[in-house]
Amino acid sequence: AQSVTQPDIHITVSEGASLELRCNYSYGATPYLFWYVQSPGQGLQLLLKYFSGDTLVQGIKGFEAEFKRSQSSFNLRKPSVHWSDAAEYFCAVGANNAGNMLTFGGGTRLMVKP
Amino acid sequence: DGGITQSPKYLFRKEGQNVTLSCEQNLNHDAMYWYRQDPGQGLRLIYYSQIVNDFQKGDIAEGYSVSREKKESFPLTVTSAQKNPTAFYLCASSKGRGWGTEAFFGQGTRLTVV
Image (cartoon, rainbow over all chains, first blue to last red; front, side, top):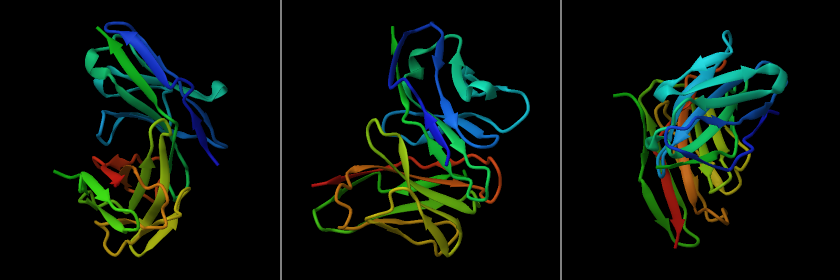
């Protein structure tokens, strides 16, 4: 069974600073990886996804993530954080079978200091 | 606009009552899912359905029931057997039966036991 770990429950960064959110996964084959963002009381919005090919993927809102098979990681990055980026971020791995279910990490809550 | 609609946004339940959460999608997706979200615990899968008239238990199905009589609809009933139902419930859908297709989420229903 697949699993996802997001080691950081909370992260606080200053506006304009760079950001990296960590995600480690466990899966027996090539994973399908996703990052979602959730504003308080809202649903989840897809930021980016990795299926195959280039290991550096670009997403919406200036985010990017890099798939590193050797480290079983899919860390999310942004060069300069904006106050509107404050939210909860979830990493997820998809099962490569007909079930196509997502397994989520516990989430990282990002706070942005002015 | 295509999307997933969950209703109601807020729901209050008395002890011992069953309540039903609605989820409708017009994305023509085959697969639909129900997740439960508790603070600091990420998302946990309750039930999923790959096709009409078929559904499977997820990781925390006890105390919940679902039906899938129409492709567009996947209602979740929280029964009196669910001992701790207060949570945020998210419905999602995906194309299903394929590899790596992402899930699209509704805006959630917050259920509170009073």
